[in-house]
Picture 1: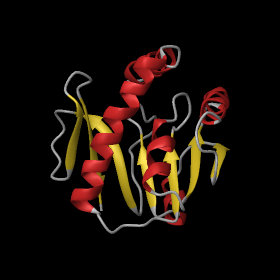
Picture 2 (picture 1 turned 120 degrees about the horizontal axis):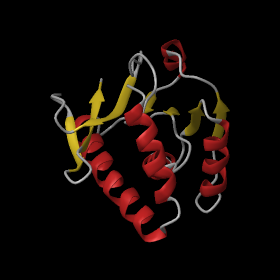
Picture 3 (picture 1 turned 120 degrees about the vertical axis):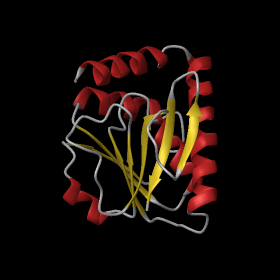
Length: 161
C-alpha cells in the first residue's frame, strides 16, 4: 500500500512552494502537538528527540524545537533528497542542535531517544518505538491519547507512552 505514502510525499513537496499554506500547516500541527503534550506529558523534558521521516517539510523539527529548545533533535529519513530539502528549509529557522541522518528506521534505534515522532506517510512494518512516541495517523483510528490535527486533512496525532 505504497500509493498513500507516495501521494502524501507529493502533497508535502507541493506545500513547500506556497509559503502561506506552509505556515498554516505548521500552525495547525503546532496546536495539535501542544495540546497532546500538555494533556498527556506536561512535565516531560526530553533531551534527545528522533523525528522519523522528517525530510521535505520539517514541521516537526520546527514545532518540537520550539517546545524543547534544549533538546537535541535528530531527523532520520531514508530519502537523501528529502533530507537536503529539510536542511535548506530549516536554515530559515533556529538551527541549533539538529542532526540529519540518512537511514531507514529501525525500532531498536528508539532506545537511544526520549521521544520518537512518526509521520503519517511512515514506510515500514509499523511505527514501533521502545520509548515515548508521537505518531500521525488517520482521524478514524481509535486511540485513547489522541488530538485532531485537522478534520479537513483527516489527520490526528496520538501519543504512546
